[in-house]
Length: 97
Image (cartoon, rainbow, N blue to C red; front, side, top):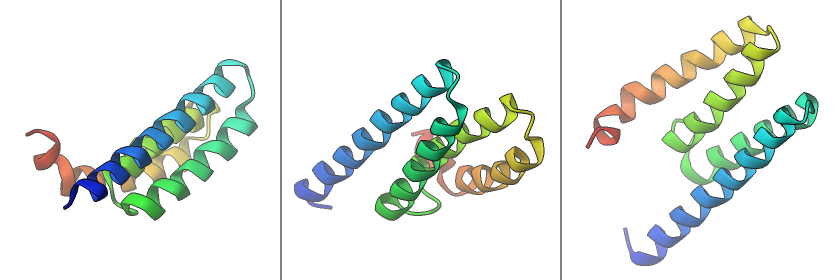
């Protein structure tokens, strides 16, 4: 991976982190619908740039799970946990280094 690829990867992570922060502020302001829409858009962005089973996508999924759980949408949250488990199984050794 070249320096340009690494810089692009870092930029994509920062974009996702900024979008997550905005979505979290929507949640704090009681704007769950707007937050959910932004979480889903951010998930699409993370999947497109880093991969569907990337740690970056997993990070977005965790926030979306938190939103669903807070709304009592446990079945939807449970379905997303399956994806998070898969991501952890694949990437946990790297994440622990």
